[in-house]
Amino acid sequence: MINIAIDGPVGSGKSELAKLLSKRLGFYMLDTGALYRGIACYYRYKFNKPINKDTVDKLVKEIDVDIKFIDSVQHVFVCGIDFTPNLREEEISMLSSEISSFPEVRAKILDLQQNFAKEHNCILEGRDIGTVVLPNAEYKFYLTADEEIRAKRRYEQIKDKPNAPTYEKVLDDLRKRDFDNRHRKVAPLKPANDSIIIDNSNINLEQTLEKILTYIK
Ligand code: DC
Image 1 (cartoon, protein in one colour):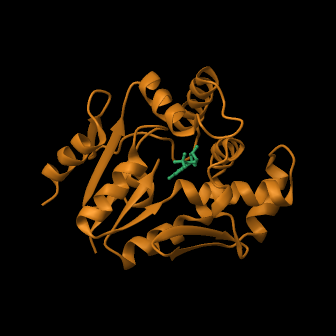
Image 2 (cartoon, rainbow, N blue to C red; image 1 turned 30 degrees about the horizontal axis):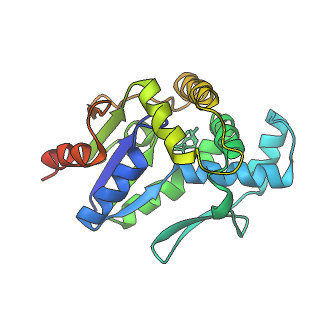
């Protein structure tokens, strides 16, 4: 199977890019952030209190995470509950970032991601795909862009939603998530040594796609 890893920080455009690439190549795409988001939704549903080591230990013992593609849309099930409608909530963005720093949470969904990649020609997008999940992926890309540009993109996506945060709050949250993702002890966000780094601060999605396609044979 051919595997493509796409990693990068919040707002680097990796999900949109992975979607376009999967259409272009006819590959499956797995959004791995959605798995952490699904776990965060279950955490809120079951424990509904600040995260600590004890509750995470309990959580990891009882959860069972699964993905299904329904009408070509990726759904995330945790203990049989489909959390897909809640995955993009702002509260879940912050909670998933926090929960993903626990090594036991990461270990829990490693096989799921690796088995998916064994069974399909696919693109996996996340934070640690090229470094940890698929170190032998055929192609590895690391997308990045200036932090203010990333915050603006994120703000544009959510500004019309009810209770949308201000741009300043989006920028603050993005800085916090970037910091946490880059400084956690296990599987921190960083480019793999053999990944192709693409800064798309000054190019749009289609141009980023074209650039990536020049590397894929
Ligand atoms: O890509 P995203 O914003 O949907 O990801 C949600 C959180 O999950 C993000 O803050 C970091 C974490 N994550 C991770 O640690 N490793 C991945 N491969 C994907 C996401």
